[in-house]
Image (cartoon, rainbow, N blue to C red; front, side):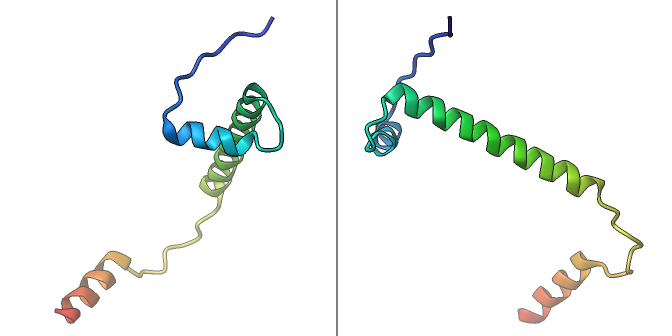
Length: 77
């Protein structure tokens, strides 16, 4: 048997649930689907982050971006 989860929705959450159930879905079904989709987004984001961290950055080009930004800001004032 599935675990029962209880939530106390605030007005923003209640409004979102109203939108998610406009198609006739039950609140339980809408919440389950939202949790599944949020989990999938989190997995994709983590996979993209891991892929980026594994990327070869190549050799430094000698440009100090912080120094360039500081110089540009100094010229603006």
